[in-house]
Image (cartoon, rainbow, N blue to C red; front, side, top):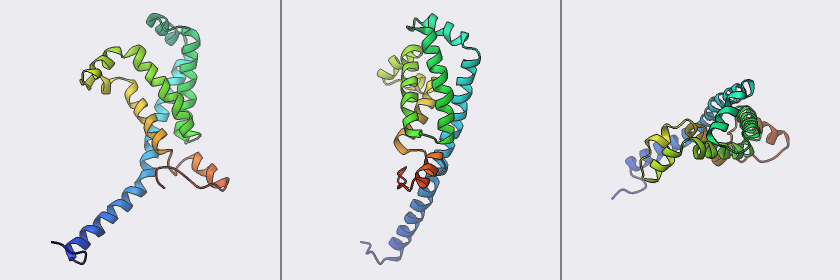
Length: 168
C-alpha cells in the first residue's frame, strides 16, 4: 500500500494539482472562446434576419407560427442583441435565458423529427440540428458565467463586487 510519503504518490499528487491549476486558468479563455465565436455567429444570423425580415416572416408563416411578423422581429432582435451581448460578455447569464428559450422554440417548431428521434434515444439528428450549438453555448454560459474576459467581470470589479463565475 502507498503511504502519503511515497515518492510516486507525491509525484501523482503534484501532477494532478498542476493539471487542476492549468485547467482553472483555462476556464476564462474557454468561456471567452465559446461566448465570442457563437455570439458573433448568432449576431450575424440576427442581422441577416433584420436586413431581410421578409424571409423569416415568410418561413414562420409557412410553419404556421402564430403572429409570424412579431415573432420574426422578436427572433431577429433576440439573436442580434443576444449575440452581441454574448460576444462582449455583457449581462451574460441574463442574456442566456432568452437565447435558450429562442432555441428551444426553434427545436419545437423546426426540428420536430430530431426531437422525436431524441425521445427514442437516436441523438444524431438532434445534435446535428442548426439550433444545437447555439443552445449548448447558451446553456454553458448560463451555468458557468462569462469568465474573466468579459464586460461583466470589468463591471463587477469597477463596482467593487466579488466576482462569481466558473469557480474563479
